[in-house]
Image 1 (cartoon, rainbow, N blue to C red):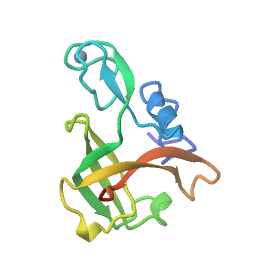
Image 2 (image 1 turned 180 degrees about the vertical axis):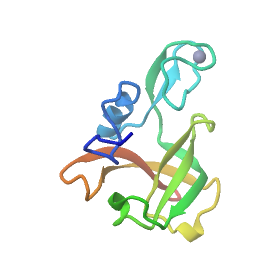
Image 3 (image 1 turned 90 degrees about the vertical axis):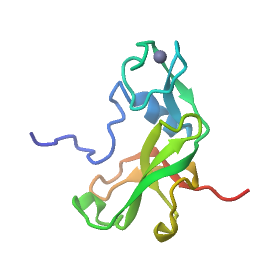
Image 4 (image 1 turned 90 degrees about the horizontal axis):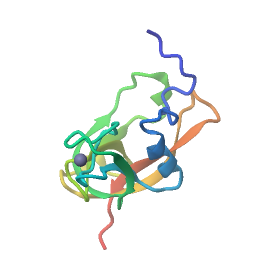
Length: 148
Ligand SMILES: [Zn+2]
């Protein structure tokens, strides 16, 4: 089946399951679903808690975490990404619950110097592609946290 949504590869911010995530990002707020019954964070978003089937509440988190894994993307598979390579994608284990691992761009980093478990911090940026002119989506990206 062909992918026909005209804003591809931007994320679908209207999907009811993930719309609150993108609404939070538009306010520079990182929201993760949390079970209202057992208090577990639930990622990826779903209708109910996978453990106790309790209702989920979108909950603001710190945006701090550690680098769980990453990949440096050097080859272009879609024309939309031609101007981005090389770029780094990462799994960030969140401070509130390290089993919650967000897949995100890792920006402003020296890819060769990355090490597992380095502290990272969220940084909201507008995601845009030259193939989808005039449209952007604010998303959480991450960068290596500066030492305090
Ligand atoms: Zn639960």
